[in-house]
Figure 1: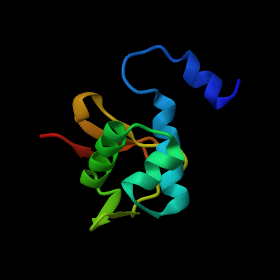
Figure 2 (figure 1 turned 90 degrees about the horizontal axis):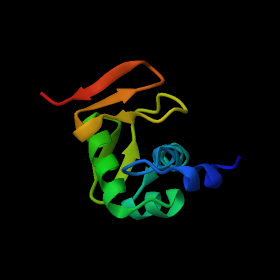
Figure 3 (figure 1 turned 180 degrees about the vertical axis):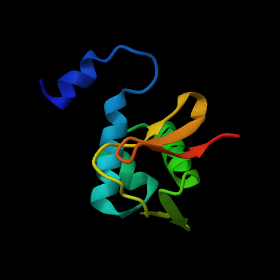
Figure 4 (figure 1 turned 90 degrees about the vertical axis):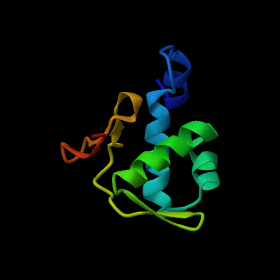
Length: 102
């Protein structure tokens, strides 16, 4: 089954989990990017992408200078998990929480 076929089968609430995989892969390949770069390469919605970039910046994965983001922490191929209601950022490669709401 292809990636696109799996996305079509997704019927849960919220964004497809594979969207986060594409965003993470795009960030790892580009290293320095804008919001528009990530949206174009990962085919993700603006609101979802803005939220992901904000959470990863908060957790220390990204640095932003003007409109350009830089990937600072590339812990591996598995994308970080953003917790429900943006409560935490968990790194699946290292098995640790990088940021948690207090």
